[in-house]
Picture 1: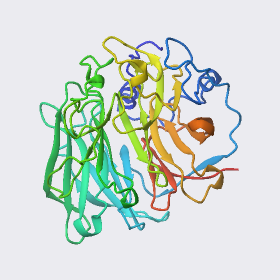
Picture 2: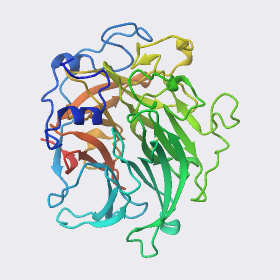
Picture 3: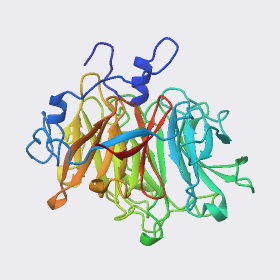
Length: 426
């Protein structure tokens, strides 16, 4: 790795290493991905080197993508300050809500010609942006039209803690009542990285799951020094699943895998993650897809199974990292895709299974990216629950998140401040 770069290449870590003297963030950090990196893209569980999980052959260099995509600036008259999450409220495709790292939530019309935003909430006084902190997650209550409920995840307090909080919108729906905050979860943070991250509600009434899912990193530093990833009684390194009806409290869904609290915290849905930055549900199958940021060598994509142990810190990707006091390999869940780091590190950004109509050849394909390289990949389903990986685009952006509108079309959030629509390419 390059001089001065630690073994903890998360997206905010990289921001502090590469930002100029005034903290300005370049539009491009690393250009096209090295072909050797692409050669290490895994269609199943193979690895480029080192002791591994199930012995599978590393994938060959992927063929040219059968489906080309392009990015078009979706709102060219708008610019944002470190955008991290963008959502539409259930049942309302006319408006977008965008969370900035500083604690501000903006609303604006879903119109490419729009040139103005409104402040939906200003939570900056509660939010700490130390390290990798900030306002990191945003989710609307599935019954938002009747409850006005909005959920956020952020870091704040002294000592630092991760929080999940609910708010209620004002009667006119134009802004949150900032005095309505109820903090549902507090998790003290030992370090300033790998804190709380994403929020999302389950895939909806068709699968009887409208519970809130919460992703938390392993607590930080490097190498999981506190062993949180393999401690299912800790919230760190987990995806939680909670019932937030009513808005001001939470309960344990009775079908949670550890609901009795005997072998893990009852809130835990799955564990063994390092830094599950972004996850999403396939709106057709209900499958939960997650991008887990790696340590120094590998980034991974997981399809999350209830009660699963996804291996960190025993494994990074599917390669052994620290197997002391680890369960047998057959008790672990391994990624559906892994890719290795280019020089200087990489940070996977989980995306969505494409279910829109604008790009017919992409239907059912999981689309995800990388913060450092700006590469956008697609995982195309194959036989026997395996996936073929293809590079869809070298964007040159600092992709920090994907967004999905109510019709299933995808968007890319560039940490530098712009929003791009994913459209058919030439």
